[in-house]
Image (tube, rainbow, N blue to C red):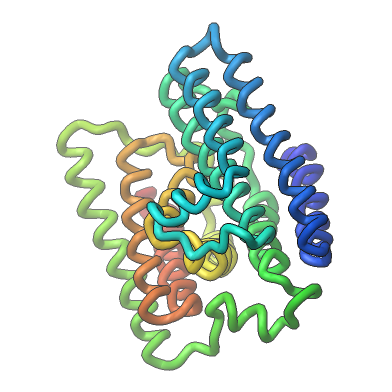
Length: 306
């Protein structure tokens, strides 16, 4: 993993912990400064790529003004109402969450469109084909840390209260049985859709970046780490605030290592399914589904190259 990623994430986690201790008035001051910085970053990015891609430039500039408009209470309340967000417009922590959510979503979507247009990543020239298992695990642990500390662990809640709030509960036998069954079912769904899309001549998925990760041991490590950490963040922390659709959308565009468009469609579908699993059961069951699906998928790559 690039050193730059560490330089971003560790201060970010410290910042989240510190912000949970701030009083509301100081938190709002920080939010206004952060909003302006995000606006400036998106706007200048739009100017920077103006002569490379007019379409991407317009998207950056449009995103910058949408971010700036979040400071306007009426606009924020309109967004909350239209998107059915479980967000309090006057709560500084909720504002911080919605600002980061949309910034990350905008960056992910624009990055994907840029990669589709140019064949290269917006911030990296290519997908890292030397990815190793430590990179994957550290990335997933950051997801977990953001969810747990963002929800108030060590500042407003103890660990038990944090996990309960995130929907992490002791699994029942029915949770386990359903989770394994649904995870296996997802594999079947993906195989069917893959065959359908390939029959119509759509591009095949590029899995070169997975080559260093294909082993029986790594299948279980990736399956469990992604299942646990991603579900606690996306379905446990984000979904109760942003709903199933928006959470699944962010989940999808944070998986742009799959360059095939049909794969992103499948990931979005899986995100929706996991969202409903979380809604009608709990995050623990979604973890079992996700972990089962990921582990079996990696084992199939290991044994059959599928």
